[in-house]
Amino acid sequence: MIPEKKTSSTEYEEKDITTVVADDLEIRGTIKFKTSVMLKGIFEGEIFSEGLLVVGPTAKVTATISTKTLISHGEITGNVTATDQVTLKNTSLHNGDVTTPNIIIENGAVFNGSCAMRAKDITVK
Amino acid sequence: MGNGIPIINEPAEENIVTVIADDLEIRGTIRFKTSVMLKGIFEGEIFSEGLLVVGPTAKATATINTKTLVSHGEITGDVFAEEQVVLRETSTHTGDIKTPYIMIERGAVFNGACTMDRGEAGVISDSAITEQPAPAEEPSPFEEKQEPLPESRQEQKKRQSREKVQPEEPASAPEAAVTNETKGEEPKPGELL
Image 1 (cartoon, rainbow over the protein chains, first blue to last red):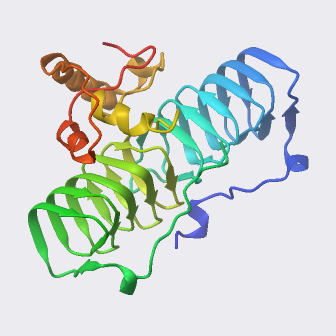
Image 2 (cartoon, rainbow over the protein chains, first blue to last red):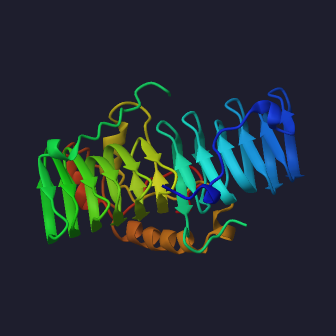
């Protein structure tokens, strides 16, 4: 098995997420955060995160995403760089490239794009 | 979308028709209809209408055309799977994947492009055959700026597809797809052609 420290959990609880952006909210622009954000609405722009980004099942995100961890249940169009891990859950749809040391794609997820991993060189801080 | 996801049916080793042990090295082409487990070294081409299992000790450098691929080992090369690709946690995959359903476990390493097309039934194999499954790059506007490596590959593919423009002939045998495996690309909105 993979050593525990290398991977973060793919599970989370919504109440533990610092900001939940509800599904009736549409954002265009740039967001930056350090802890955790769950998007449930429409987002277009850029996301810079040092923490956890959760894309909810109702979310539509068109963005360049730079984060530590991404968990997606929804729809993402754009390139993603995650320093820790990317998880595409079974309802997710991802169009764009992924660069990350750890990736999990669940059965049922759709991923169109290229994936670049250098598992041995990327060390998670 | 949740419906119709193929269940991963990975038989126990003793139920696999052919098991190629880890001391065997094969270069060339293999074809099979049921199930094969590779544990040794393979270089060449694989044409399958069934299940290919790449064992944890296996190293396959191959163009793979199969119904289902389950990998625990190391694969270098492009894969077209009609039904499903499963990359288990110990697997390393370098190359492009075209399949309607994919599952990648935590710990698996995947470097390459993934193209998934599961529109209507039949579209998958049709598009694979007529449009040539060079794993199309994304219709992403950010592509050029960010990804030097996929970019250069895309350049090659662009060149190839220009040289080898073929009329669309709806073929249905999976073998037909194999010959087209490494070239051409699937037109997508936003694709740089």
